[in-house]
Image (cartoon, rainbow, N blue to C red; front, top):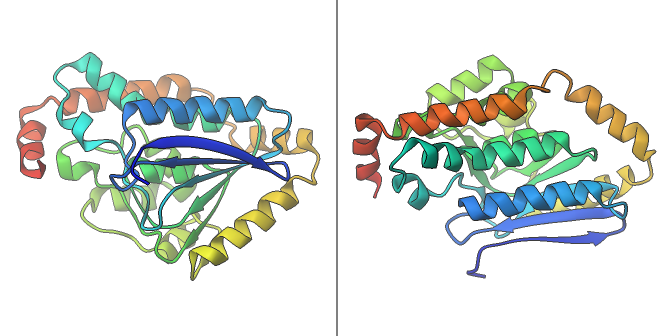
Amino acid sequence: MNEPYVKQHIKNGVGYIEFFHPSHNSLPSSLLAELARTIKTAGEDSNIKVIVLKSGGDRTFCAGASFEELVAINDEDTGKEFFSGFANVINAMRKCSKFIVGRIQGKTVGGGVGLASATDYCMATKFAAIKLSELNVGIGPFVVGPAVQRKLGLSAMSQIAIDANSFYSAHWAKEKGLYTQVFETTDELDEAVTIFAENLCNYNPKAMSDMKTMFWRGTEDWGQLLIQRAKISGRLVLSDFTKETLKKYK
């Protein structure tokens, strides 16, 4: 399994959307665009009642944005476009009329924490520690910040954003409200996700859609807000400080 992909299959009314990249499920712009399109299409598919978002492999749910693309940014427009990738996926998840259940099997970093936070109900294994590492490379979690803050609260979000070197355990993330349940193994996680998602399919789709609208009330400006945040990151990544810092990680 070495080729990146975004794929979807439907079983018992559940649309399973899976992404993969051999670099610890980091997401380049092309994969982010495909993921946003797939989520939008699934939201419009009458055969799908509930969506499950997952990633391939066992070790990492998502390592965030593509580092190779990050270090190649040389102008503000490219920077804005790059950082808009996660913004577009989060907004697709936000606007999707169907509940999205997150299946987090391993560590998740940066933009991956934003994806987990943008799900409507999220389950994980005990290996699913989280980290917002953006400050380490001279930027910040500006794009994913609103989604993470909405789910964890300002105090917890600011804690992990400032402490950019540390992974916070899955149980810590559960205590703060990101995960609803934490399982010992991936098999236990998969069984629980399947049972939960298929049970949701028995409920009134209109009721679930209206509930989702209620839960996301107050985020109507995110279409503009997250793109504005992408501009901030796009400018910061061009700073001398960040460029010098990125050289150390090459």
